[in-house]
Length: 337
Ligand SMILES: NC(=O)c1ccc[n+]([C@@H]2O[C@H](COP(=O)([O-])OP(=O)(O)OC[C@H]3O[C@@H](n4cnc5c(N)ncnc54)[C@H](OP(=O)(O)O)[C@@H]3O)[C@@H](O)[C@H]2O)c1
Image 1 (spheres, rainbow, N blue to C red):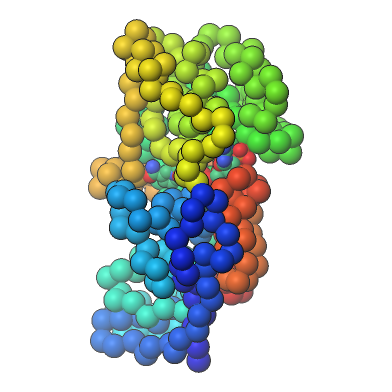
Image 2 (image 1 turned 120 degrees about the horizontal axis):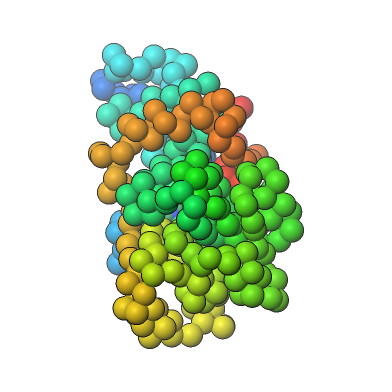
């Protein structure tokens, strides 16, 4: 038996292309004592992976050229040489972009999705969901009657941010790209308002639905969305800085120096801008996330959407598309049935 993997063939300059990836095959290693053999079912594709393709210093090490692309997966245990796991168990692990892996059992976590599909362990009940939950709980802290704005609102982070705002009694305003995503955010997710960031009148449309300003802006994108949000932030507004996807491929043509306007607003309106990586909050908040959000997802009270692409070989194209918004919901690769 062979395992297929996708490795980083070369480092991209700007937008990645399929040439930056290469498919390779290798033998599947039998597990030794304390290890488990895994068959990958779902691979999560996430924006952070763009950072791992670059050499630039960041909060995590880059993937070496020739190394397997990093990524979290949901897997089935096919053989266990550890007493805590049996054949057939469903687990999650950082196997990378591959079909099979053999890992130390300590690097594997059992999946508990409270009856929701196991794929949710990579989305609303996984890392992206926890990011939304912890960023809102620790930094955003929405209160009744406040206005919360989030972009990439149809994605796994943004969709939960808005629904958490609603649960806290706040008003949720989403920003999304295109009419289908906007309709979903308003009609299915139940946000109070939504604005299309591709609209020519985006900034004035955002102002039109934030008549009392913005109290919490959950920053997922940066770029032109930040330009439109900044003038609307109220005094003491909180800004959990979660992601800046607009700049992951490098500066865009319409980019300009945003620092003077941002710092001036921070000073004059006493804004709180706080960057975070979700792992910072795992110890303090992961258990409460599972206990609070798991049952709400399983009961259907919290909604989510998955965009599932079949076949590991299609991962590079799906990933490249996500960076410009071609995904609609949590992007997953179904590696095996
Ligand atoms: N800090 C952390 O620990 C942490 C953890 C997880 C994720 N994140 C960050 O959270 C953000 C959302 O992640 P996700 O997994 O939920 O992604 P996602 O929504 O599934 O996918 C990214 C979305 O970003 C939007 N987008 C891309 N380029 C844009 C641009 N130039 N302007 C405006 N929107 C743009 C697109 O949606 P539209 O078509 O709607 O524009 C795209 O679908 C990302 O920035 C990610 O890096 C941070």
